[in-house]
Amino acid sequence: MRTAELRRRPPEREHGEHRDRHPDYGRLIRDEATDTVICHVCGRAFRSLGAHVRVHGMTAAEYRREFGLLRARALSARSFAREQSRTRRAGYRASEEAQARFAAGRTMARSGELTRRRRNSARAQADPEELRQVRRESLGAGRRTQSRAADDRTTAALRAGGFSDLGQALQTVYVDRQHSIEDTARVLAVGKGRLRRLLTEYGIGIRPTGQNSAAGRRSRVLLNDRAAAERVGAQDITVWLRERAAEGATLRELAAVTGRSIPWVAARIGPRPC
Image (cartoon, rainbow, N blue to C red):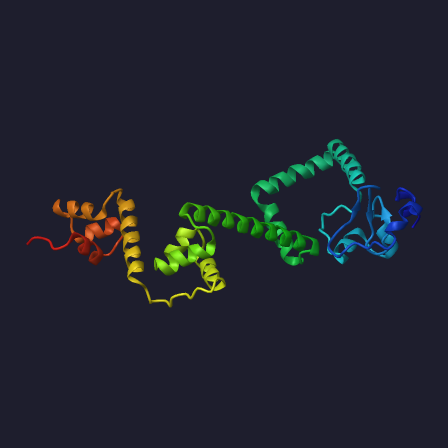
């Protein structure tokens, strides 16, 4: 207790407001104004908790496990941690033994042994709560970024199509023009799953699978033709196929080049002279 009292700065009476301030599980609270950290157990402020936690009958490692902190989390105020880091670095630079350990560590890192040991160690221990919180926050931020990017793409597509709002665009493209789900999703720059959710949200019935309109079938034919033309570098795939057939190319060869089936190639070439 005496060591902890000596390491605490400023004196305890100046931290009366922190006595009942117990950090949440998985978080370490640093008071930047007083340059201290708050103990999870007693709620008091110290420059470093490393010695103080012994009062509560645990080591620093046990304290980190008990309250879900990262295993490498420094239990000290920022300035105190920086002072300790500078002192340790100076000691390491002056120590031949430390230099030898660093050299061995670099060798292990280059060989991949360090990664294997870290992976095996991680398997043997459950992730602390702090790490899980960091992951959740990171995933949440990523999802929000993706959502904003998707909204921006949809807004740009609506502007390019001359639509005033999303409901009008869905009604015009999917209902009035009878576009398929795939075509509508491409026009509005949304995924097919999100498009189905939007159609339901706006009260527009989704056509059952297999119930395709003539416009939808024509659209798929055009898409397939365009893809084949891009694959061979032609403007008009039908003209290109007929020219190659006139030069003596077989249906099988043309099907392999375009990536389509033999019946598809034959339908576009038409009847061949005997």
